[in-house]
Length: 217
Image (cartoon, rainbow, N blue to C red; front, side):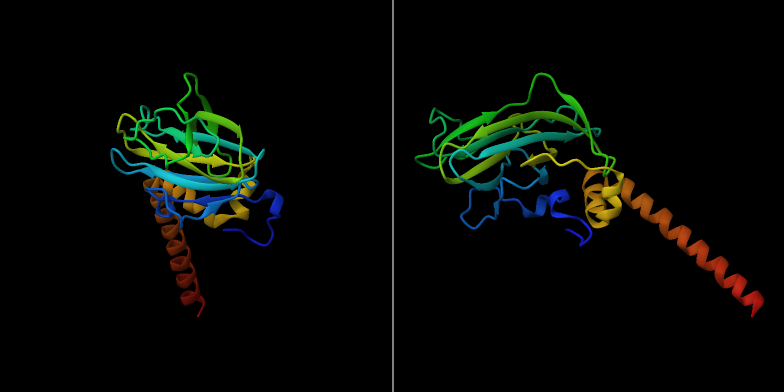
């Protein structure tokens, strides 16, 4: 969700778990390659695979990063990513994890042996950056990105697509709805606690204001 005072060069789009597909679908939204996209996803159960669709021209660059929130319970959650489409290797792929339609190939990006910490200045969320990948598309076509976990772990992930986008604390004030959505996805309990404190503070303020008004009235 964007606001009028955010210029297009600063903009990025967000996608949350409710907008993902667990199979390759022709009616799935097609994501652009030239715009920064942040997919805040979640594998809810063992064996789940999330699919996203991008479209590009031959020679276009597909850039993606995978990150896992630094939260309790996710230290061993390391999903894999597969890029599926024409012109990619057509070797034997384990159909237990993702689907490769006839005539297409796939390239699998496994979690890196060495990770690095990633801090989102906008939301204050902290992540482990587990994969970074770039590919020149070999053909003009739709390509599919699959996210899955081979060990059957469940958990949250962020899939960054497109050019990297720098954010800072000011971005949170420019895009308050995005900030709240990200915090609700990242750690809903913390967000509820903050909202509860804010509501209490407002209630105390109005109670004091009404008390002063009654005394002067």
